[in-house]
Image (tube, rainbow, N blue to C red; front, side, top):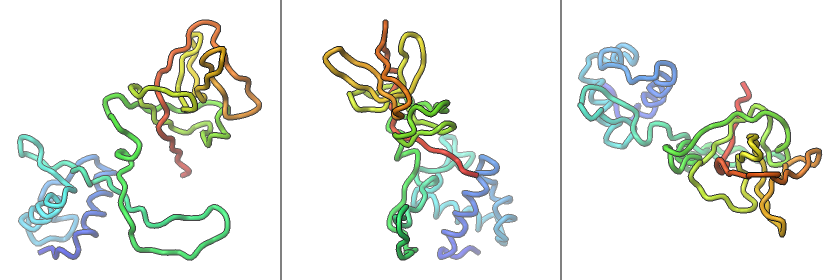
Length: 195
């Protein structure tokens, strides 16, 4: 039988399994994976994880699915990009990346960046940007815009002549619409994968 003090280890293994298979395993498969003596031990583990929000039952109660906390990741510490600092290991908080970057899932899309006009904003070619299509844009926001029927990501700026788009790279010019400037959405975050 599983001991509650092993639940964090079991949860980590379950998260890895889900990442590979996109499903929570059956009681029998879970027992086989974790070396439990019975399916009952698997059910008890999932019941404990459900009690703290890591897994849930489907509405028709026929399967387990990830719960609200399943995708939380530990924020262990800050790390300097300058001089090294002493390493600390205790968990300070947890963060679900989707909760951090996505306010309204129904109006959020991801776009892949092409080009280098926003490098000074920390947005590089190949990055994924998180775009909220329903958030009102203000001057200074990074936006995805349709300007004269062309798609681009830039800073939204305003002056006496009206709204225009400014690059985050001095090698590129400011874009003033000849016709229409439409805001597709506001960029709320970005991410990239290194390996």
